[in-house]
Length: 327
Image 1 (spheres, rainbow, N blue to C red):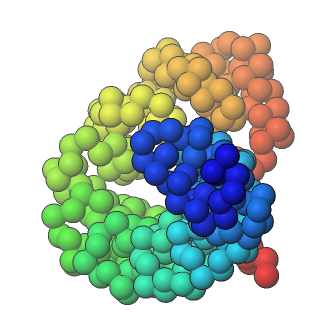
Image 2 (cartoon, rainbow, N blue to C red):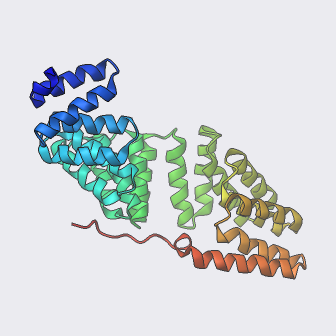
Image 3 (cartoon, one colour):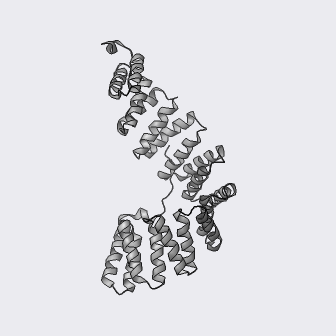
């Protein structure tokens, strides 16, 4: 009876005590009663949203948090949490709008900038991703993770010169870093400067033996040098680190085919189709290997499967195109 006579502030305070004692259901009931009395009661709206987030009820949480942001647009936490919930629901544009509001309240929050850069990239807003990543990097030039986010954002935006410059800056600051060495090697490789790239891949491997990408790119350079045994060994090592690494398995198949080991190549490609069944590339290479073995009917089926998958998933064969963030 006492709770029925209380105003929203008192109800919310009592709900907080219940929540602290683990009586979440009772607390939610009081917060709901508070917003029935005062629909714009911010503490109750926020706590209903926060409680729903903790319970994994993202749809309900988004509804409460939207109301909380409307009730108090100067509160960072509600805007930040709303963006987080919306991002989990793959509502990218809405999440970014919520986070933009949060960032306006805390313009120096580099962690939020880093998260926003990733989400911008997810939505193919690559120019915004790059600007956000570099704004965060300016605030924390000693944080290696921000260099990596900024490098990827520039790459995604198609700004490869800028990405390469950032990779060199990262390596100058973190010369022992496996990732910084790999990024420089990667950009040299992309430019066709394979011999220059090789030492950076080897430094990355020496710094972090479990890092699979340098092994793959080292194998690719060896394949171009026609060192097929060496290439096969590098690709196998990459696959030991990451068995679902499709491009490494394709590289291994190419190395085996170059040595005339067609049965081994077919076995690797069949494994690739099992692990990555929606990918057209293993089927295309498989059709070539089978044709060379004289298995023309099986080669035809593999080629048709590759064509069907390319038609069904054209985005997998194309570089994602950038777009501006809608105003």
